[in-house]
View (cartoon, rainbow, N blue to C red):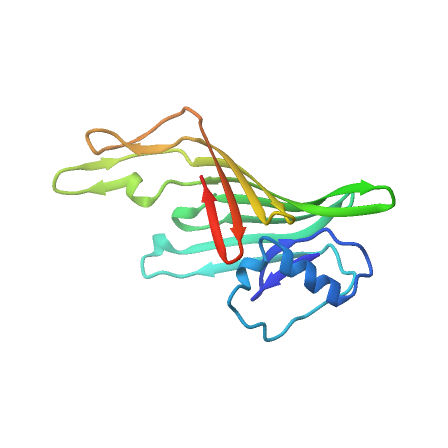
Length: 223
């Protein structure tokens, strides 16, 4: 089930068919991603569409600027589907104009409840959220062309590629979130010791781990 807050998808939950709206509401309030967008806010209206899954949305967006080179146009595709009962949402974007031409991005999101069976009892006390992002983007305009009092350059840099995976594990029983992120960048651009932009062909891989625990109204972050 896709959860939207103010028209934006905030989470995708794996739920059983034919659940009542009251049961869905309880699951949403326990969701680690959707709940943070509802904190300290009054819910005016909710829309519940029962047993609906799948679907897609195709669109085109055009933006105009006084400087023609900064005009932007892109096509996008969004949707969701199920793979062996696991809900997966996707979002793709491809730019067609301006300095962003040929930029693209693909994002896949999913979540899964880790179940533990004890006799005839099935418990879901852990929620696993997965996000994968892959993109290729042209460097910022300033890296291509610049002319100043001390520096000037004309570069033909290649697009910067990024692959990023994020895993978020939410333990309901101890209100703890473990967030792991790994990303790989190729064609990375940096400024050297002479304050000139350079591009490296090496792949750069980095990662981080966050642990968040809630004690009543207080939070503890470990990074």
